[in-house]
Image (cartoon, rainbow, N blue to C red; front, top):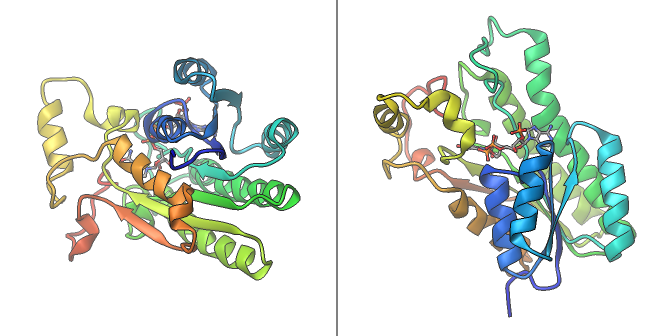
Length: 270
Ligand code: NDP
């Protein structure tokens, strides 16, 4: 018996990185998975590789109309939805360096990060609750926050703020669902330094790449980057009925970074 047999799941930002690893692990564990992303070509080809239990849908997490359209199709086809992973996120450095410190960040750059990282999670939780309630599905909502949601990051203020808000909203959603008598759990995962394409602009491909990698994990007790499949393993547990009594919880996945007193955080050590 696989751990997610019979479950219908939706993962945002699933075309690559952590989202792709979660979608892959969910399929391996017997779920039918909707991979969603704004990167249609990468999302479609991953879904095709994963086989008949994976489908791709275009879903920009910032747009409520996209959420409504995709949720309607899932509901019409399956009559329920059991797992939503709100994973899509941006740092604000995707197109190169821009000021993201509290003194110099522009309001539009601040808003752009919050629109994806926070509005996207708000909409994902909202539409997950609605479809799970309508279809009487026992559900698990998993929000991907960050270590940056637990500490300040001077050079990435919007990222840290948005991830802290995701942490708090997760608890609100968990309490709301419990208060409503809905069998819907909501938990957050707080990764740090997981080697995905998100890091590429910061690592570069020059001769100093290896040195930069070592530098980025020098405050990590395990002295290495984490892997996307290591995040996916925790997501599988939260999605499964093994975690049936777990809601409003936050799980750190950071090689031990937050276990002790940390030095002052730097701009890039998310
Ligand atoms: P990646 O950048 O590798 O992948 C993110 C995916 O999300 C991309 O396919 C991207 O598409 C997509 N995406 C971006 N914006 C949207 C949007 N508006 N709607 C839907 N999809 C979108 O990121 P990671 O896999 O590294 O990160 C995944 C999550 O984990 C994020 O929330 C991140 O903040 C969090 N996290 C990551 C850490 C790490 O070290 N990697 C550490 C802590 C937290 P496109 O490529 O076209 O932009």
